[in-house]
Image (cartoon, rainbow, N blue to C red):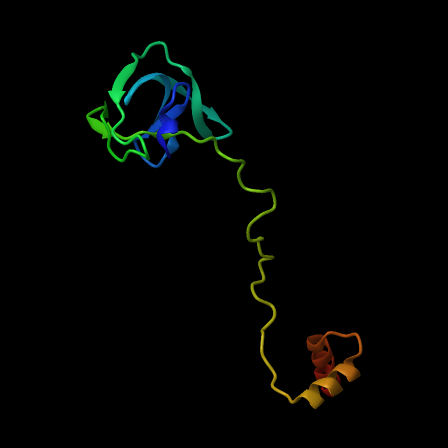
Length: 149
């Protein structure tokens, strides 16, 4: 983040915890040098995620000095409920999980195939491939074993 992050109109967030329901959102209403004025915003739940809403008229504006204008503040001069909080620029969530992504659920049977390797010379592999024609190698060997019984 650079100094352009703390400009008038940007939304910043102060984290109380990793759970974003406990984040505090502010809009920068003015800036003079390193001094900024923050207006608290409502937190609104949208699709299970908390995002900044409109300004909260019941809360007072906060004027404070930006302690690290060139990056995210780890601890700053914003004190809420006895905790000193740092500010960072709020970034909108970019989409989310794609539909159908991730590991698919199994069928409840567990593993049904066992993977093994067979070491043969090139001539033997070529002979096997000509015998099996368009059948997969594993299916061909399974068929040959079932015929031998």
